[in-house]
Every structure is written in structure tokens, then in C-alpha cells.
Length: 344
Image 1 (cartoon, rainbow, N blue to C red):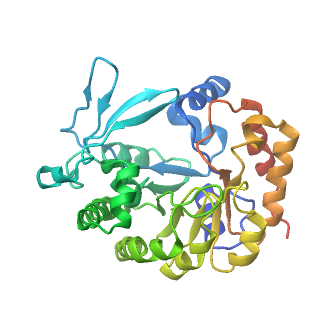
Image 2 (tube, rainbow, N blue to C red; image 1 turned 180 degrees about the vertical axis):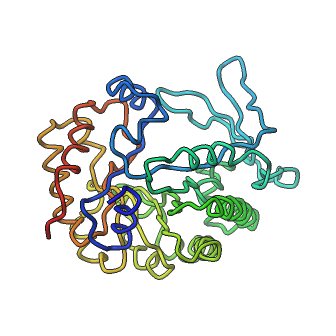
């Protein structure tokens, strides 16, 4: 099978020749992998053995980030970031004072240049990897990024209409982005918002159903209207099992990332595998960074046996692979996947 055939079979719950694999990497890990394999960054997916090519969108050509003397910078949404450790963290939010909403200009999803890089990646996909349009955060997260989490949640629970307006505007932005991504001919669309914690939902399932589920339903409808055959992946970190039946009801195809520290992947497969495929399942909190190669191989083999049977699994780490992860553990994960054809 080609990578594309393998991925599409697995995500449609049809048995492929082997479980497909895809991981994304922090820039530090990507650089180390390129050095290890002696390849260019654009070649890494093919060289390491990813079966998926991720396609995203960019700021428009007209946007130029404002960088201050302290190293902080402002993105096109007006959010101010500063590098903390390996990550750019938010330090100021343009709508922390909700009165500013009257003068706030939401980004234009149709602005020229957003898909220049996406088109280049698609044109250079000579190895027939499955293509996944990546929206990133899609409604709840971009809304609270604009306001700040604490302020947002207070106003969200008080049902401030300004919060609903912000949620609707972020939804409209990502609906338009998804229409353009899907029109490029991608195989898969990935959306999501983190609404779970290690222990459970960030909010009650009832609140999620009332405030966020209807908007997610609109987004899924946009995907299907753009391409009825598109495969939909939804991402949320943490334990979100209470709303998995709701996601199935909305027409979800694939759930990501199924963190083993939060939900048991084998149990989730048994309960929901007739309706969903799964993407992820390999622990990034302990197994990949801190255990040895043989332990990584054992976890990969266990996931293939308990989640990958009869298709239904795109294996990968449950987060971007982090800088504290040994290269030998990453290569062990890929080697184990590629040496385990599905025989049952």
C-alpha cells in the first residue's frame, strides 16, 4: 500500500497492510532528527516514515509581526507572545477588556497568501502521503486566547453575549479557512480545542453541550458540505470520555490523541471502535521521554494489538514530540510500527 492508501483504510476502519504512523515535532527535535538522518527539513516526513503530510495555513502576505525590544511579538489577532523556554507564551490579550470589542477587527480568512505554503507542500508530495489539513484550535481556544482564560471562563459561565459573539466570529474564521483547505484536495481535516484535563472535562458536559457543541456541529457541516468524503479528526487533550458519544452523534470519524495517562486506549477502542477510529495513543508524558527503547517498542506493539486491530488506528505520540525525547526512542517507535504487519 502507499502511505495514502494505508492511512485512508485505517481511518475508515478497514484493515491496512500495517498500522500507519504520523508524528509532529517541536523545532528542536526536528532539527536533531534532520541531523541524525542527514536530511533537509522538507524531507523529514518521508525519511523518518510518516504516512501523513500536514497542511496548514499562514498569516496573509500583508501581515508583518511586530517584534519589540524585549523579544515579544504580536500576531495577526493582536495577541502578544514572548518566548518562555521552548515555547512562545501569551502575555497580553487584545480583548482582556471586553469593551474593546466595538473596535476590534477580526482577521480576514480570505486574505491573499494564506495558502501559498500549503500549495507548495501539496505540489511536492511526491511520495503519496495522505494529506491532513490542520486547523489547530478552532473555536473555544482562539476565543479565550483573545480574552485571557480566567476572564473568558468567568464571562462564559455568566453567558455574557460578547463571549458568544467572539465564539461565533472565531467559528466563522475557521469555517472559511476549512473551506479553502478542503478545496485544495486534502484527504483529512483536523480540528479541535482542548476541553479536557488529566482528571476530566474542563467544564461540565452539560455546559459543553449547550455552548460549544452547536458550534462544532456547524463546523462539521461546513466540512461535509465542502467534501462529503472528507475524514474529520477532532483533537482534545485530557479525559473527554463524557462527550465522546456527542462527537459520534455529530459525525466525527477520528478522535485524537487518547492520552494513556487520562483514558485507557484499549477500553476506548472496545467502547467506541465501531463508530470511531483513533489517532495517537503513544504516551508522551513518560514513555517516549523517560523509558528505554524496548519499553517504547512494547507500548507500540500493545497499541497495535489492542487498538489497531481491524483498522481504526493512526499511531503517534499524544503531543508534538518534545525536546527531552531521545532520538533512539523515536526511531524505535517507527521501527516497531514498520516491522508489525497486521496479521489478524
